[in-house]
Image 1 (cartoon, rainbow, N blue to C red):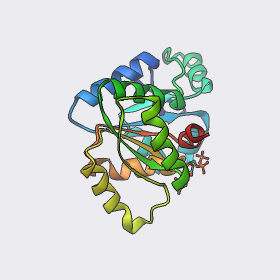
Image 2 (cartoon, rainbow, N blue to C red):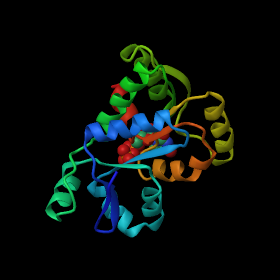
Image 3 (cartoon, helix red, strand yellow):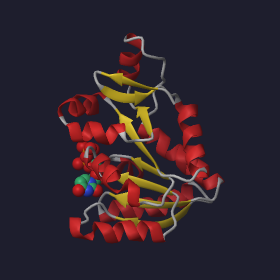
Length: 195
Ligand code: UDP
């Protein structure tokens, strides 16, 4: 995908179908692809936080999450992306995962919300398997065990719901140790799904 800079912060010139096609390629490929959403708040933040900027740069897919990012890209004449909300991409990935019989690991949110999402997703997307889950309040010394658990679960899809920029930092820090194929930072989406 074509990647451009908005005020120094990268974003991919993609639309929804192109984003899903990228996910499909990742699921059928060998490596690990991190997916992060770029919205105006994250652009402002990344301009002042080089660690966040680096985290975004290292992602495989940077979706234009928010109409502001789409307008800025078009107005600057840098391309014609369409809006790809992360909160809509996650269900679409679940649908694709269900059709392909994929395994998912859910990391993040409160224990209650995390458990609810693990019950709801397989009901909503028959064929999708919850291979494992972990709430989002893990102490740093326990992180390597979590990574081992994720890999042992043989999940291909990992959703990370720690909020931003915590989830972007976590994904960048651990991507090299993970054996999943797709890892999406989904912010507060678990709370939305749990209702
Ligand atoms: N969260 C988490 N671990 C943390 C901090 C937050 O799992 O250490 C979860 C939180 O439970 C919620 C999601 O991350 O489900 C988004 O949190 P928050 O609203 O604080 O972040 P924002 O939406 O502002 O990025």
